[in-house]
Length: 385
Image (cartoon, rainbow, N blue to C red; front, side, top):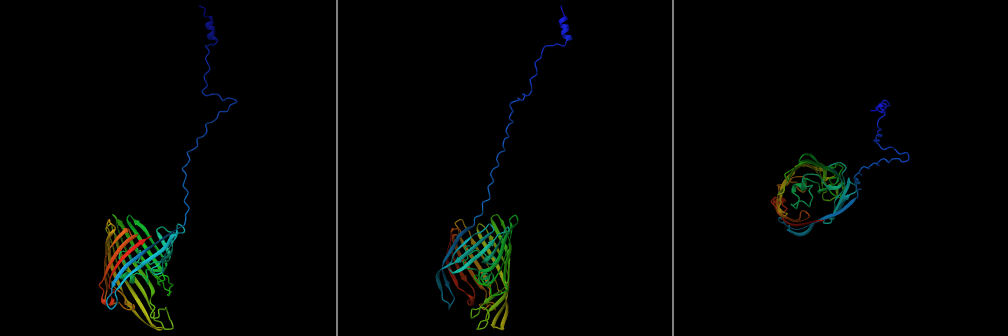
């Protein structure tokens, strides 16, 4: 066998040709540029709703209180039977900005402006009022007329828990703040003229009213307890001439400095509402009999009440109140010879809760004859709008 060609091939390093390896990546062409993948845009964020611009608003409102009443007055005073509008009020309330509001209401029944104030709500939980409003003392004095189911104010509240009227002119602040869990703190104070509504002050000294308390809400029952205090200087009466100060006929006005304290308790449950107050006032009374002659006395009137009304699924219930008060005489310089004592029984039915209601009260006056008003029956209808 001829092995020479094989040996020569080995010596010269020849081998069977092998194909070139396949490139791992495709070559870049000279004349065509490869296009990188386009980036994928992130998903668009959900549009954020722009804050709605504030729009001032004004709301008309009002209510009518119409009643029929009979009074059995002690002799020699005559008995009285009458239909009357206790209140016929129409007003406007609204907001100028988110922090500034207003309330104005006029009463056609006695042709007088009632509430008229600007309200400022710049601090959380606090409202400041500038104008004419109910003064801040106790429970019954501050409660809305449309919510009270005993139709006439208690003796002690009417005589001691306010000035000449439940409303006065000045500035007030009131707030509520959660303390812990079901406990809320309440505070209110007002500084007013002391001359009553729609009147300028005749005296330089102002009158301060205030109340502080706590409310606890548990299992559908809310209990509120508070203490109130007032300090001021007021005109007791204008005397026979019905004019303030020194007139051509002389000075016969009566003035008094006073310090009044009170405590109040309310319990509101699904079945019954309870309210109770006790008020006492120390008064230093000066009565002028001539420009340079006067008499002074110190008196301490006091009084209170306990009231309740029941609730039911039929928006109807009973109304009860018992009250006693030892008050000043009409001259203001002494206390009456006995205690005013009155018991109120009645019932109510709400066609629409509070908004449309019928209330009946019968007041039994057990006061001494000298200070007795008389037994009174009242049938009362309320419509709010």
